[in-house]
Image 1 (tube, rainbow over the protein chains, first blue to last red):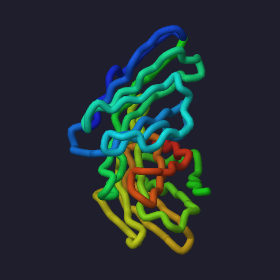
Image 2 (cartoon, rainbow over the protein chains, first blue to last red):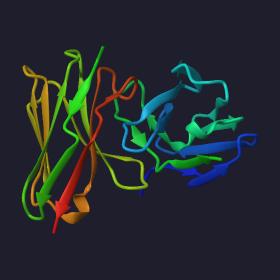
Image 3 (tube, rainbow over the protein chains, first blue to last red):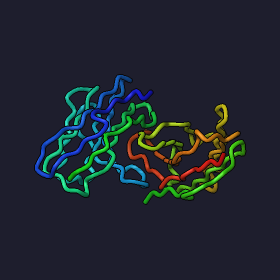
Length: 113
Length: 111
């Protein structure tokens, strides 16, 4: 069982829809991450929140909007996506000041039609 | 920039040992990781090693680090069909932040 929980597991959305991906962790980690993973590729970093502040944005298009309401929760708001945005979206967490490794959730499989 | 390279495919027979190799370029790497990804799942942290260590053993898993050659390997003893997955090598100088992943090695275990 993973200690990072992501919902939903699967999501199908049209290009005009607005949806949100959710992530929750209860390990007391103060850094949370969004990664995008295409089939047979390694995960690509999108955003990093450290102590609830956005610290890294890897030049992600504005149709992806992250939000960190508190230290346990991370959301990714989606709007006007393109079919090429279809991928596995992974949330991860770590403790930034202790050099801990990333702990990943099981991801949300997103399909944009 | 930093880079992590690993072979893309490995096939072994059930019961044999598997060795997955990885090379990295960043000499300041402090943490080196192995993650396992099964179909439809996220990345599961298998083990990790600090750059001041040469070896780490955890049950069937043995990690060897040659810091001079920037070479990392993962040995799985008595490989089982449940070990079939993609294995990602990764490195970081800060732990978590700016983790660099290799392309992943697909391990196929034949019964």
